[in-house]
Image (cartoon, rainbow, N blue to C red):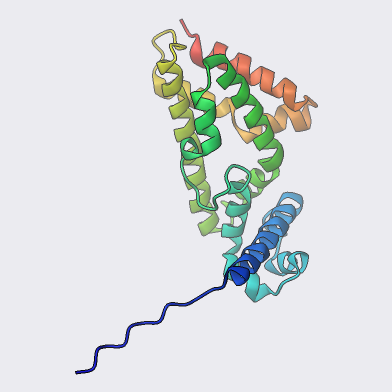
Length: 215
């Protein structure tokens, strides 16, 4: 009796894999620049393809238009393309392990740097959520992830003995989410003219006044 033929494994050479990854990286970098400059609606897959030096079908292999935007945004936080809890990111885990004051100072510096890289992409994603059902679902996933991160921040602050008063943790997390939002960064830095350092110092003080010390 003949044994059933086993499916052959597809082999991709390391050089081929590296070339595919480099091409994908160019596509995401081009998408990031175009989405940040033109917004979601005005950015086309053809424009991304031209900027990346590839064909439109090759861009399609990297994902839908909404997926490209989300990956471009996600890459400002992580070296991973998928949306995962911020507290799973090695950088955030290292920050949370620092002594309390050093952790908070490092966190606000990280937050300012993150917004500097991503604020335009955030607005593009927010706008896309009203135009594209796939983008809307992804935007909701990211918003919920960010809310969860602020709730985790409140839990961390409680463990460090920073919280006073009987304000519910959910209210504190909601306030933290507002303080850390792209909209607030945009208002103070891009509209009002603050430096990222001024913004970071303000967030640090606001966390004390509005989230932690509420006795």
